[in-house]
Length: 108
Image (cartoon, rainbow, N blue to C red):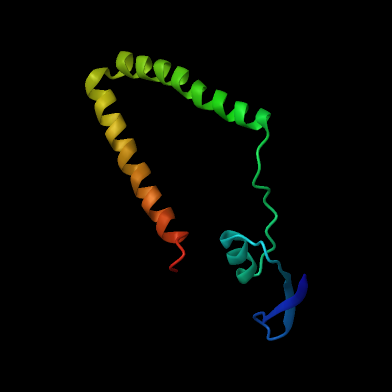
């Protein structure tokens, strides 16, 4: 491995160390992008059987929670309130998703 240091000026004009870039032969595309930005990739991209089971049970738990939410919505607002509640929240969530997508896109 070859180590080189990435330096850039801060607002005052002096230079400071950001991160030492480590160049390896088996670096993935996302790791290389992080290295180019000056960050050291530290996220482990592996899951154990326990982690997979935990995420699976969380996904199944959402279905159980939805039944009580739909029941409460039907009793409180009826079909009209449930319909418009879903559509208003969908509009806001889609707007937030598009804003975050634009903020975190690669093309900025």
